[in-house]
Length: 223
Image (cartoon, rainbow, N blue to C red; front, side):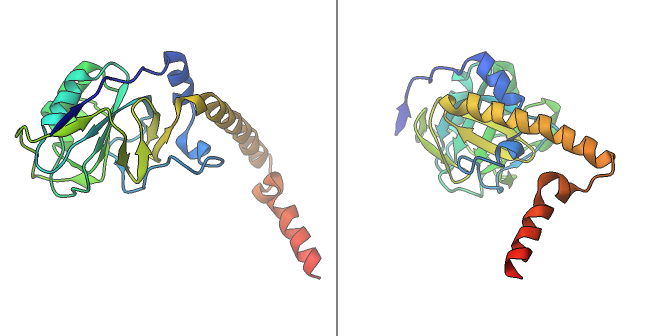
């Protein structure tokens, strides 16, 4: 059975640019939900993407819905693929990645496996997945779902959510949360540069961030 819904509205380019300037690992200092399982790993180094989530549910051996999604995707979209628990069969490989690149897809997140790593890197399509397999999906026409709520990396993802990903992890958040989260992260990134400057000046890290005084107060209270 196929379920084919309309594409979600895209998040504004200004918000996506703002989000992409923030590091997921910095947002992880103050936000604790929306981070995918570490089992979803980047196949590229030193790459960060942000974009609008276009969700896909791909069951079993049938890859028809992956092809459909690539055909519908817009520049800047991030394909988020729910493999319904399958960890044996690769969801996509070089040809699909090449088509996604030509469509302008910002990246692909797979709660499952992929193949053709060399080609994925050659075509410069940022991909995150649980690993690789030499066994691939087939075009069988059995079914799948497009632009429905899915689960990826143990996180609920809705069409139109924002996705921020780099080699440290993948974050999904509502578009309404982008500005507050990104700006808070950017301030922390700016403040960290000052911390590094003070370390270069000879100060100790726990003294700068307040850990030394915190521990001293705890020990004093025990005395």
